[in-house]
Image (cartoon, rainbow, N blue to C red; front, side, top):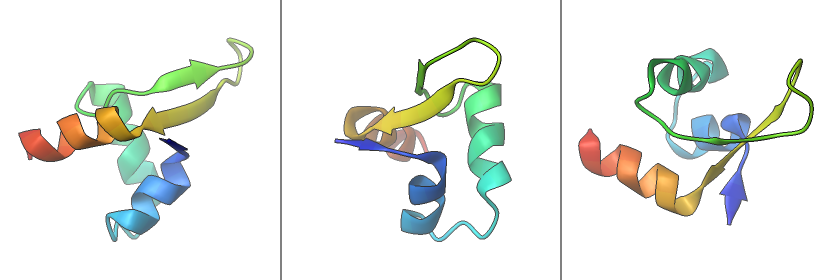
Length: 56
């Protein structure tokens, strides 16, 4: 199962989706990028989310 950044923010009760994007940019949360390099779609797998949560 894959989640969008918005879904991750909602599921973790994070008020601002930009927080999820900051976690991705800093390398704390791994993601899969789909599509063009200019504006790729970001998806977070259940495994990637579980790894992030186990680090916290």
